[in-house]
Image (cartoon, rainbow over all chains, first blue to last red; front, side):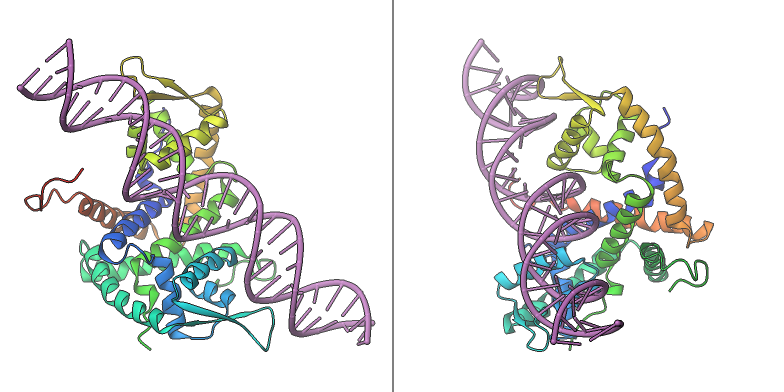
Length: 157
Length: 157
DNA sequence: CCCAATTAGTCAGGGCACTGAGTATTTCTC
DNA sequence: GAGAAATACTCAGTGCCCTGACTAATTGGG
C-alpha cells in the first residue's frame, strides 16, 4: 500500500540513465578509461596546466574525487603533476603524449557511442533533451550555495 | 585543440543530473536513507516477501549492489530476511514496522523534493523530460542482452 | 612583520555500481 | 536417482562520489 511509482521520480530515472550510459561506455568506448577520466583528459586538452581544483570544477567533481581520478590517470602515465613554483599548494597538470593520444582515440569512440545512445530520439528531441537536462542540473546546483540572503529570488545563473 | 564540449555529452549530463539529485536528496529528504535504499523500501511496500534478486530487478540494481543495500537496511532494522522454506537459495524480504514507518515519512519528503527539483520545468516539459529519460534508458538497456544476431559464437556462460 | 583567514590538497569513512569467481541449492535430463 | 545446468547469493577487487577533519602554503589586515 502507498507504494510510489518510481518512473515519475527524476532521481531514479537519472540513476538509470547513468547506469545505462556506464554500460554502453564500457562496451563501446573503453573498459580501462572511464567517462569521468575522459572528462578530465578533455579538460586538460582544452587548458593544459590547470590545477587540480580547477579541473574538478570544469568537470563537476569535488576535490576528493578529482584527486582519486587524477591519481589513477597519473599511474597510467596519461598526465604529469608538478608543483606550481608560483604557489606551493597547487599541482599543475598536463597530459603526456600518451594522454593526448588516448584522448584522441576516445574522442572518436565517444562520438560513436553518443550517436547510439541518443538514437531513440529525433534530432529535435535530442536538443530538448540536452536543454532540459541542463536546466534541471543547473537549477539544482544553484540551490547548493544559498548566497541566498540578498537576492533569494532574482535570477539564479 | 580538439577538446570536446561536454555539454553535448549525454553521459556527462546524466552524471551531473544525478549528482544534483544526490545533493538535494541529502538536504531535503534524508542524510541516512539514500535514494536507492528508498527505492528498495518502496518495492517491498508494493510487494512484500520478494526475494533479493527480484527486488534488484525492480529497482535496477545488480545482485552485488542490491546485497549491500539490503544488508544496510537490515542493519538499520528496516527489513527482515528469512530463508525461503520452499527454495533454500532465496531470502524473502519484508519490511519491519519501522521500515514501513520510515517509508511513509520519506514518501512525503520525496514528493516535496521532486517538486523543487523539477521546478525549473513547466508541466508539459516535465512530461517530456520523463518520456525522453525513459526512452533513452530503456533503449540502452535493450542493448545489453543482444538477443540480437544469431548468437555470435557459442553462447558464453 | 605577524597572525588569522583562506585555499589546495590529503586522508578516513560511508555508500553506490559493476565484473568475475566461488558456494550452495534446486531443477532438468537422461 | 545421479550428474549437469541453472539459479540465488556471497566475496574480492576497482572505481566513482560525497562529507568532515587534517596539513601545508599563501594572503591580508592590523
